[in-house]
Length: 373
View 1 (cartoon, one colour):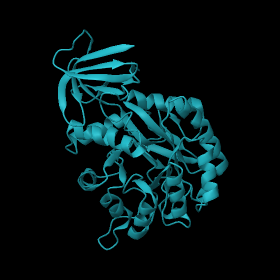
View 2 (cartoon, helix red, strand yellow):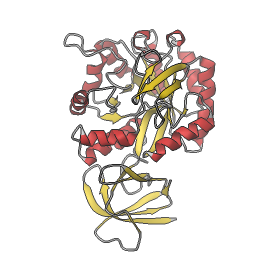
View 3 (cartoon, one colour):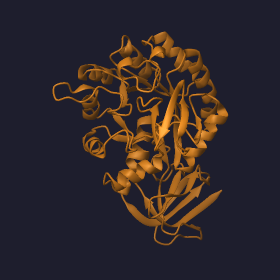
View 4 (tube, rainbow, N blue to C red):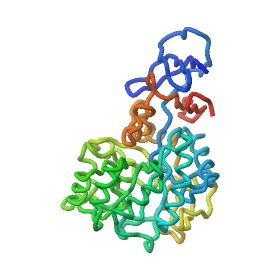
C-alpha cells in the first residue's frame, strides 16, 4: 500500500515546511518540498505533526486500563487515538498484587498485538505521604523478588515503574528495573534531594508528573523536583491541563529541564465524558468542571486531558513553536521510552503515525501505521 499526502505543512523537529509525504507499507519513505511527483491526497495545507506519544495514561472515553479488561483497554485506546495519541503506555494504579499481576497479563496481550506500547506500574511502591489518588492501605515497601514477579507478570511488556526513592529497598528495586530493561520513574515521593539523586544514580530516568504528589521545591530543601530538573539523564513528565500546574510553572520546567519535558495526560476514564462519578482503580472519583478529584473534594485524581489539548496549550499558553510542541508531545516521550527509532517525529524510515491539525490546532484526521483511523 502506498500513499502520497500533498499540500501539507509538515512539522518536523526542526521546522515547518510546505511539502508532501510518501508512505509505503506503513512507513514514511520520502519527505518532499514543492510539487509532489504524483497525484495524492490533499490536506489543504493543514499542519501534519507526528502522532502523539502518551507515556502515562490510565484511560478515557469511559473506560480504563487499571481493570486489565481487554474491551475497556481497546475503548480507552480508541478514544485517545481519535485525539491524536498513536502510541500509549497503559498505566495501572495501586491495587492488590494479584489484581496487578492479572491486569498486567491481560494488557500484555494487547502489547503483543501492537495496540499498546507497554505497561506502567504506578504503585504500589510509593509514599503514603504523597499517595494522591492511591489507596494508602494498599501501599507496600519494595521487595525485589515481589517486584520482579510483577515485572514477570507483564510477559516482557513492563515499560515503566514509578517508585518513591526514600522507601526501604527502593534503590535495589530501581537497579532491578535498569537490569531488566524497565524504566524506573521517581514519583509519589517525599524524597529529599540526596535521596532523589541516589535514585537517579541507581538508574531512574523519568520523573512522574513533576511537582504533583511530590515533596515541594524549597530554597533550603530542593527535593526531587530540583534533582530531576537539573539532571540530563531524567525526562520530566508534566500534566498541562490547567488544573495540575500553573502555566508559569510549566514555563519554568520547559526552560529548566536538562533532560527534557514530556507532556502526559495522566487521563482516567472520565476523559471525553460528562461530569459525574467515576472509578480510578479502587478509588471513587468526582469530575466537576472537567477536574477529577477523589470523592468528597479530596486529592486530584488523574485528569480528563487529551494530548491534542496539551499540544494546543503548549503553543497557545506556553509560547512553544509547533516544532517545540511536537518535541514535548511526541519526540521526548518516545526517547524516554526508547521508541524514538520508530515514532516521535516525521522522518524517513519511521512509522507513518501522523496527526493532521487545522489552523486552530484541532484534530482533523489521524493516521496510524500508514492508515487513516
